[in-house]
Length: 375
Image 1 (cartoon, rainbow, N blue to C red):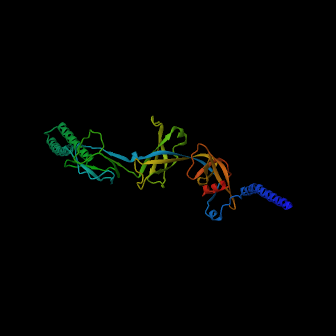
Image 2 (image 1 turned 45 degrees about the horizontal axis):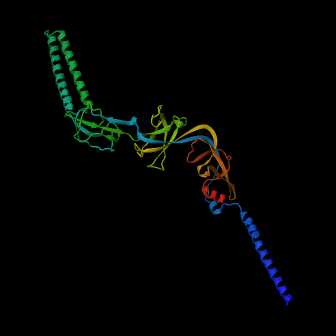
Image 3 (image 1 turned 120 degrees about the vertical axis):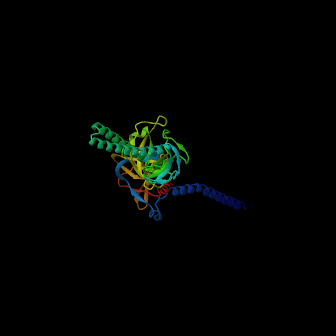
């Protein structure tokens, strides 16, 4: 009986040692399993995604500097006319409103003026004087032929007649300048075709020639100016004749092409900027004065540099990267270094180093693949 008790105790010890050994083996297995799980296979781009990817390459070309400026659309002042009153009087029958399009010769309004009545009266007096002096000249010449008048009398009569003709011509020219209206009204006509961009008069308003203010301003908006602001730190990057792309808030997807044709040589004392002028064709009248504009100025530095598509560049943790495609779904993350102090276009990024000409790059869904490679 005693022996059986010792045997039972021994079995219990063996079972206990087995349990302890099993518990000790669990961490080892866990560590071994963790080691196996850390050894993951490299990420391969799935075929379904690979079919939709855009693959581009590193290229080399002429280095083009692009900077973006703020600007504002303005009238082309070379194709703008201010209409001033040539006579004083009451303005009547205004036929146009601000923003209306008019053609050259269209009537804009009428001025009832005593000055016009005076011009008409001067014309009548000049015509009467010509007829009177002509008769006097003829009579004097007849008397001279009969010996009743001297040659001096004929000369004086001729002078009086010539002066009367001269006065008549002057009266006609004055009346023509003022519209050739003999009823006492001055007709305001558009001198050029364009839009009424400013209007400072109303019906029944009294106007005076010595006031100095224009009645209307007409501008041909088929051609407009854009004034861009250039800080002095960017002056060396802007040149006469540089190509310019202009965009506006009203037409975010549309680019208006132009060139810089004037650079001012003074800085604004308050804003410390200088103005550059861009001339843009505006045949469909899309651009309107006072619109705010974004002006991208591009110019070549006559140097060669490598560049990549903008869509292939990723910025993460203060570093730029591209995904170099090695074929068969394999891609690698490569750091690149853009050229400093050089504006890049929306399509190209110029680089100092990081990749070589001809290397294939992933140019679409780059961020998605970059995250997969990192994870």
